[in-house]
Amino acid sequence: MSQNEDPYRPHVALSTSSLYPKGVPETFDAAHRLGYDSVEVLVTHERMSQLTHQLLNHIQEYQVPISTIHAPTLLFTQQVWGKAWTKIQMAAKLTEQVGAEVVVVHPPFRWQAKYARNFVQGVREVSRMTGIKISVENMYPWRVAGREAVVYSPHYSPLGQDYDWVTWDFSHAATAHMDSLAAVQELGSRLGHVHLTDGSGETMADEHLLPGHGVQPVAQTLQYLRDTRWRGVVGVEVSTRKAKNADDRDAWLSESLAFARRHMEETD
Image (cartoon, rainbow, N blue to C red; front, side, top):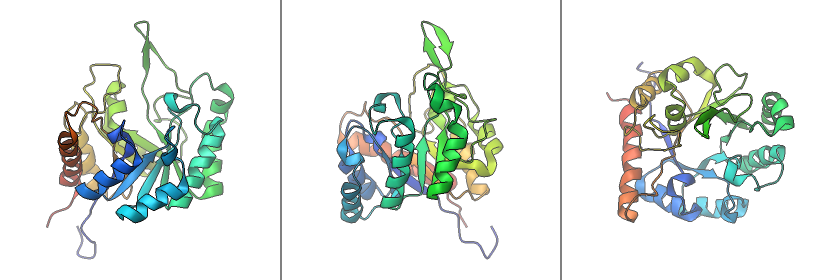
């Protein structure tokens, strides 16, 4: 580190999905108590995740900003905000209204043929019109009747696709048997966002284990981002549904935050 540079410090957000089935208020409360830098809001059927004034109220109450809006492009949120492009446009608008930095979207499902056909260029155009960074997340193949099926278009992997920005999820990478460090190095300046988690690589399920509890080179990847002084947001997106109680859940979320800081903060 040069004498003119400040020590590198990661920006770590807590995703509302990490507290599922709890919601937005519980996520803001945990982020405030545990020392997270911001909140990532996954837009779902929960009305509070969709309403600007509710989100602004939580920002004011807990003094924790929102850094990221995850558009409702998951399978279980297909009925939220209507048509596919409407979801992207509304997510970009919400991002601007709450002062966030990035929208996370999933690639289209193969049955969304018209949407998929113009997806790469369409995402770029919405980003240019709104000035919001729209970051496409890496996904994974599904297994149907014992056979692997590619259900995303143009592909579950963003590598080789002409996206301006990409979100990298370690759990998805584990399910897809991809090397996260190599992928992040290949993406270079196109890496727009990170979902901090892990996976065993032994199942086709999306596990969202705590970082360091799976097989992905999570620590090495975070250290690489530190060394290259990457300026994006690291969003903790882990599953806490198996936590026995609120104290256990807090411990897991604290561990994930400490993992990010341990491997990304520069020391003298």
